[in-house]
Length: 320
Image (cartoon, rainbow, N blue to C red; front, top):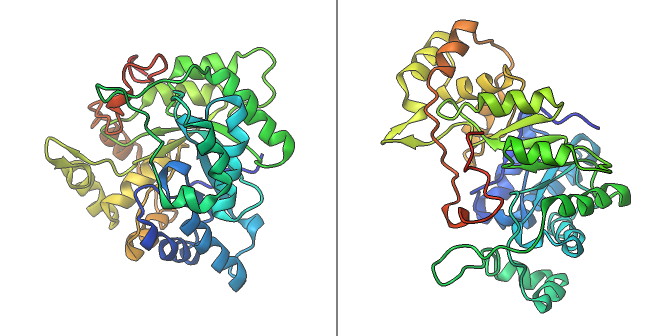
């Protein structure tokens, strides 16, 4: 497998109008890894930025590492290839470097006619999200009748057919990952488990579990967010370490993951932040710094996806 670059750009929450310029700026700043997903509804614009830079000769396709994710409504084996092709078509690429199962939970798939008309990409793009979250009368997600082990077989088929180079998972707890790794007849192992991770949710146990099984870890939301109104970026410990190294708090948070051998995908559409977030290879945190940052753990999960908590495969009912 081609190694996943240590730092990538997350395209989550990047509005379609701004993400093309963000991707162009990121390639200029040295990013080669772009983390996309059908659910972000901006793959067409991400693809436009990538294509622009390839045309310009700034970068070749084979220099880039492009990841996307299978959404929960497409866990049925018969829908996986359709979903993957839909992302490829939006990105205007002929293969992905990495395709992930976005969540271990399958949702009720959309109406078959809707799937058919998905080849009409304009339809999909003009109505983003309309079928992504099927809800019951109490506004909880309607589960599908799928098992992620079956979904995985369809993911493996994508590797065989050459649509994707590597496959992995996201938001899997250690029991779910173990179940997948022990699947009889497994053809391809997941190369990574992409999980929320930052100093307020250090994920020590899950990271050590994944790494002991030779599955890399990718940290999303590495800059955290607010806890009781305290933003992780403003945490005095992070602020102090940043001052000592003459770096920004964000650079400390990103470097922290790199030193744990965790791949890290900060998201931003601000040119100065995009640049700054990859300038993290010219300094090192001390063991003392690392311990101080780890001690901030308060098990604060930001991405809890509450409307899915009744799902049989909801990943956060157990400790890790």
